[in-house]
Length: 131
Image 1: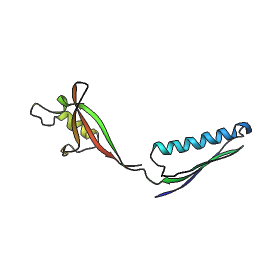
Image 2: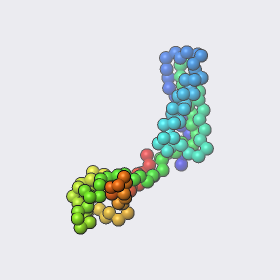
Image 3: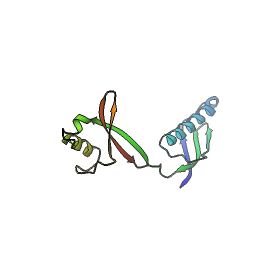
Image 4: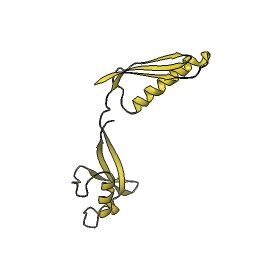
């Protein structure tokens, strides 16, 4: 679901010669911030408005919530994460708790062992909910 967004900023007297550049910069900054957070829908349009005492931007197709995204995070070296028998070490359990998982979480599909730079590391795969 998307809707239009209007942001208006009241200011002190702005220099008339700089109005267009200030208005465009304000509009671009707001649109850029929304885009970085994944909140702009397909075909969005940005329109800047400016007067000597206000700057405004109208943006169409702003999403109510950004999409969920997958994220991979390097946790620690595999030799620290697992004991000699290949079982999860307490260090891995503590790190997963720090990331918000229960100590007895099923590790299948959640972590991956991967070589990087000549050493083996443990990576966490998770889905980050949208804003």
